[in-house]
Length: 165
Image (cartoon, rainbow, N blue to C red; front, side, top):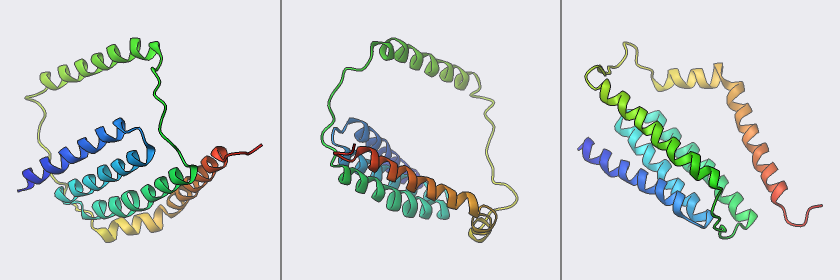
């Protein structure tokens, strides 16, 4: 059953990511990103990481994507104009991507017998341990990150405002 759910939500995640790239309207891209984030939360649940799945839904699928869609709607972004891109990107990009895929395939095929196995550690982290570290030891970086995200959104709105001098 886990394997079937993995393939369903993994395929949904890949389809949402491809739809994100192929959409021309920014609001549709943001909605596709919500599908990707929610599918990732289900994959985290299948791995037994309940806290990570809940954080994925609450933080990313909920708060961050609502902010993204709000900013897109506030800026009234229309359809994207299709450009042909630069020739340098085509000349360097496709051979570079093929070289990277070739190197990765070579490494995986060469090491296919020596990959080893993964096992759980001796100490399992509980949600209370994780929350103690996050909200006691790492509280300042956690809050600074939220302030930086707010500043970035305000900067984007200020830069894209129509009629500013």
